[in-house]
Length: 381
Image 1: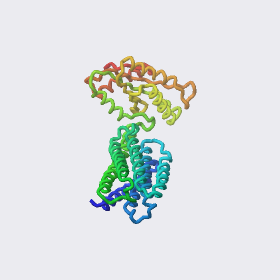
Image 2 (image 1 turned 45 degrees about the horizontal axis):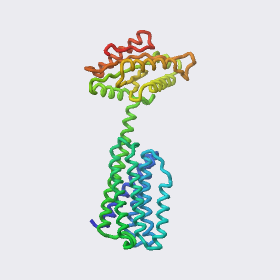
Image 3 (image 1 turned 30 degrees about the vertical axis):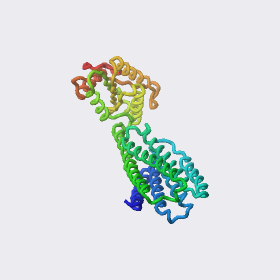
Image 4 (image 1 turned 90 degrees about the vertical axis):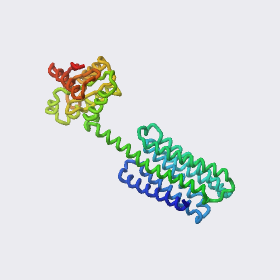
């Protein structure tokens, strides 16, 4: 494939990606990495355009302009990766390589040594691509599979930059101004084509993955309290029941006593505040691996994996006691909430989710029938 076609193919993909990312930046103005990606791809397209036309440009432009655009494009790619990962993006990432490259151009122009600019540019590309790959490989983006494609793309460009730097050193003074139209240039352009395709596809992919994950998380949450909802509770309970038998777990169900009186006496906003306060108290007093969910109305469920009977009872009793001493902003000092609770503890062997929750419900009703503000252990335990 001739070099003109390769230049054109690279530039076309980069311009299309830049326009696509700009459209996303306008639609999602809170996601700054789309703007950085759009600018990065546009600068790389401009760099290739200048490289393709450098035989028609003055010597100063041949030395500085395309190489500066190339370096700034990769610096913006690093910024985009950092923004996506939630890292800081200091301005010196842009101006330091730009100033350094401009400074290198002074002796290069005086001596007519294009190889000096060529080597410096490719070393900068190598470092910037490596830093971008490292950012995508970081733990902040763990779980997003598309990051591996981005790591591959930028590792490829880091290796390409190193190879080109070595190539420039090997030529030394024999290297003329600008790029030579030969098999080496064609190879570099093929590698570039692979890079821009991979980077574009996986940049869209990683954003889709994150958005899908965020939507799944939103769908699993109760909008009032921010804790999990019944659907997520059921899903996790099914996982406990289908896990390898042998371990014990607990299932707690809390019901806020006389909740209707709170709504009638203080209003529905106060009722919502009570539910939020109760959810926060329970969340602070369970373990990191436990699952708290609002099951509906004033009922809350807690899954306690890998817990002993005494440990589960201790958690339930601690929460029950803390609730009756919890201050309420919407009520006077003499008003206190209480909760009734039912607890299942066991292995769940030969039980379905329905039968297990029926056992928990029965123990909860027993707490209510015996005077409320107490914890009852399910007979099926």
